[in-house]
Image 1 (cartoon, helix red, strand yellow):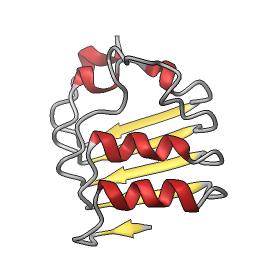
Image 2 (image 1 turned 120 degrees about the horizontal axis):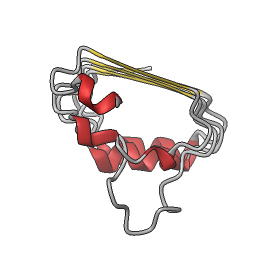
Image 3 (image 1 turned 120 degrees about the vertical axis):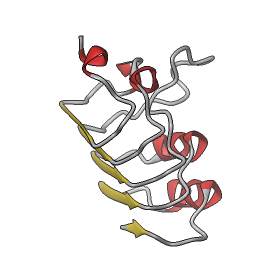
Image 4 (image 1 turned 45 degrees about the vertical axis):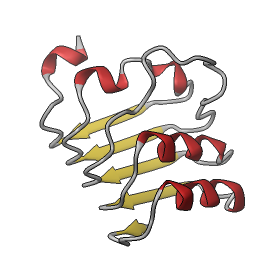
Length: 119
């Protein structure tokens, strides 16, 4: 669990992705997680559950039109729970091909997500 550590940055998540290759479950709570930091987590080959909560800078879950779609595939990620990430919008997660094994997506208290995005 990375929780409220003021100096956890994108570089920290990049380091995690290179050293914790057997990590299956990750919770990120109130950290400076941006889209590039999130993408670095795609290098975790065993990651199956991810929870992101109250990360004020987190604004994209999947690129709408990735330049290289195979570059950022979360191959084993089955469950994503995102809570209180206010910059996440309807268009922030439209490309779900990034998550081929995804069986559960929970979005809650993300103020800019509307019911339109589920249609």
